Amino acid sequence: MSDQIEATLTEMGRRARNAGRALSQSPTDRRNRGLSLAAAAIRADAALIAAANAEDVAAATAKGLSAAMIDRLTLTPARIESMASGLEVIAALPDPLGRELANWTRPNGLRISRVAVPLGVIGIIYESRPNVTADAAGLCLKSGNACILRGGSESFRSASAIMAALAKGFASAGLPADAVQMVPTTDRAAVGAMLRLSDYIDVIVPRGGKSLVARVVEESRIPLFHHLEGLCHTYVDADADLEMARKVVLNAKMRRTGICGATETLLIDRAVASTHLAPLVQDLLAAGCEVRGDEAAQAVDPRVAPAVEDDWRTEYLDAIISVKVVDGVAGAIDHINTHGSHHTEAIITENPQTAETFLNGCDSAIVLWNASTQFADGGEFGMGAEIGISTGKMHARGPVGVEQLCTFKYVVRGEGQTRPG
Image (cartoon, rainbow, N blue to C red; front, side, top):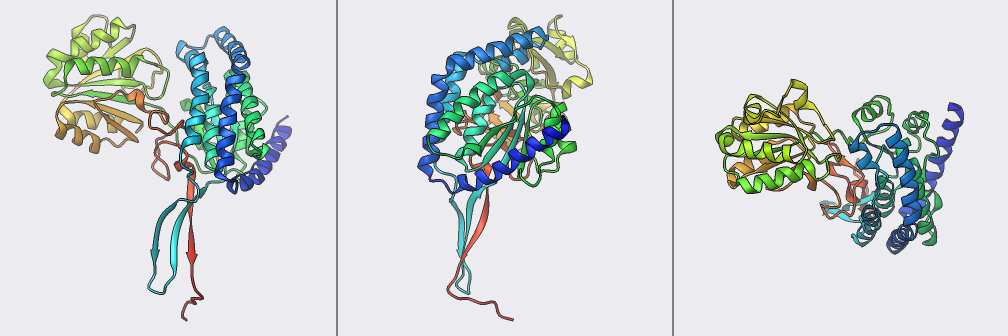
């Protein structure tokens, strides 16, 4: 069976490489038309997609998956519409290809330009969120990249239904059929086979839990966009407006607990612990959130459980939060840089100087001032969608959209110049 999977993935890689070359030369309006037609196909097939998703959700519920995982898996009518509208937003973006990133002329008259081009073939390995199928395909298509998608077993029916709609839209626009392909099996051997396709895949994007990312990092022979866990923090400063803090913290944790932008640790300046800590903790408890805190947090409400060291390093993806009192903005930055995953951090303060200290001091891909960490999303950044939030520092960082799926080449124009001996 593994030999058959290896052969299947190798053939997919070969076809993706050929399709990617054709796609990179396709006119902008054809790619945009493909995205628009794919959006229309998703709307037309919404009932089929919802039915497939209902089967996935039922199977996941029977397996005892957590409520947060079920939420990530579930496609409501609004989420299906969001996939379609996201494709239309991507279509409306400027073409990222052919952009002149820089230009200069050398003393010998050579004119040199740095020009944006596609990465080539992108492999996306993801788990329970079926909407990634549309987001990744749309972003890759817009940026002239072929892609191979490997979704998780929990969302296989949903992803397959979405893929069928996408394929209809792309084909109607005359785009290469192999530009977007989906691995046709849930066998875990397919992940290993995909990670060995260094002759055909240029970049791998792992989007899932810690175990998936760890496996990809260990086994991949292909460069990665690291999409590590979202261990996000919100820090409430001494100069925070309490009502704003209450509103933002509750949203940052409880709007959707199962997404990577959900706040997992709340930090509060010791200077306002006597006034701010109790209402913030009690808001969370009243909303059904389990709170694990240090001694100061435990003292404000008997329902607060003692936090252990692992709590400061845990991405709960659930209605659980750890709470700690720190010594000012320096203490918050130190805690975040020591325990965080370099994903997303927020400060609530009315003091611009403190805000700038925080924004400059946190070594994370996204930092926010007076806003919820749940804005850590490519769609909210105006990118239409994202393949993931890159927590690495090479090439792309933060939401990975169409511009981040491009590299560049140098174009040199001359008039017969030769290099002297």
